[in-house]
Length: 128
Image (cartoon, rainbow, N blue to C red):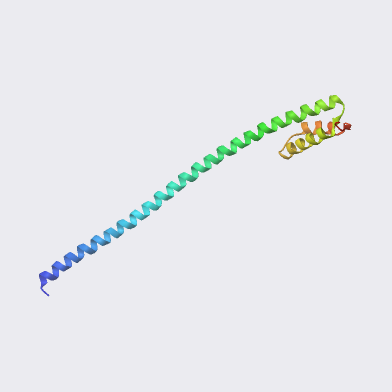
């Protein structure tokens, strides 16, 4: 083979190989960058979800506290009314006991327990 042609083929082959090699290196770099970008996007999405969950948990705790306050007020007020009345209807006792049990299961305090102890000692009557 002619030495000039041989050199020309080597130069052309070298350019093609180097170009392909660098294209492959660029592909690997881009793939790695894309993975990092996707990971960063995923981490940001997770962080937003956690912040949203924290806010929802706070709201639920506040709603629970409000519900507990309303339930406590209602149970104590009704209990005091029945104590003043001197008796309680059977159906009212059932409703009040169910409400007090739910209040206690949610972590209620002793104020309701004291009131309910007095209410359960009251004579019961059946509504006509």
